[in-house]
Structure formats: structure tokens, C-alpha cells
Image 1 (cartoon, rainbow, N blue to C red):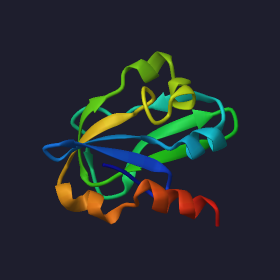
Image 2 (cartoon, one colour):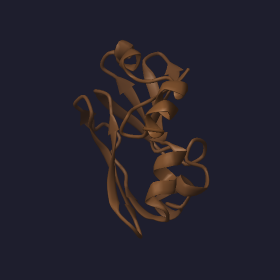
Image 3 (cartoon, one colour):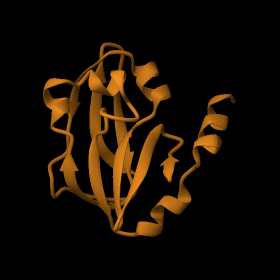
Image 4 (cartoon, rainbow, N blue to C red):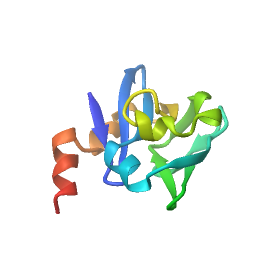
Length: 121
């Protein structure tokens, strides 16, 4: 089940404590044209809600955050095609896969319905 953070990231549970992380459609729309993504290194240890990466757009610079864990894979397509984050933010524009320190960490995040409700406030 996909979970969301109030900071506009999504987390897909891949099983075995691994999650694929990206930004929501709302975040991609707000950032507009993403021109560069500073991807994390594979093996990077992350504290809870630490910045996973930096996204630079023509309008703003923003961080994407992760639950505590270790980066095990990055979407290398984003090095040359940062715009994938805008074109398909909740699909091919994913950022990284993280092995969570605590697989139950996703329980603290929002369902899609809960997340969408936060956008209307």
C-alpha cells in the first residue's frame, strides 16, 4: 500500500522492509519544471525524516525526505532526465529505494485519502 507524508513524498512498500520513494503529483506541480536532482549515494544512511535528495526547479529548490534507513538503489534515469519527476512523479519519476531501519515506520504515514485531505486545507 502506498503511503504519503505531509511533506509531499510517497512511499511504496516493496516488501522486506524496502520502500520506493518519490514526490507526489501535487509537489511536482508546485515545483513546476525540475531541472536537476541531487541524488543520494547508494549506501547513504538516513536518519528519520532526513533529506533524501534535493530537487531544483526553475521556481524553487526543495528537499524530499525519507524514513530512517539506508539507500539501496537510486533512479539513475533522473541524472539525465530530471523532468521525469514532473512527467510521471508517482511512477517512472521515483527517486530512490531505501531499506528501512524499522519496517513499521510506514505505519506513521498517511493513506492517499488522508494526504489528499491535507491539500484542501
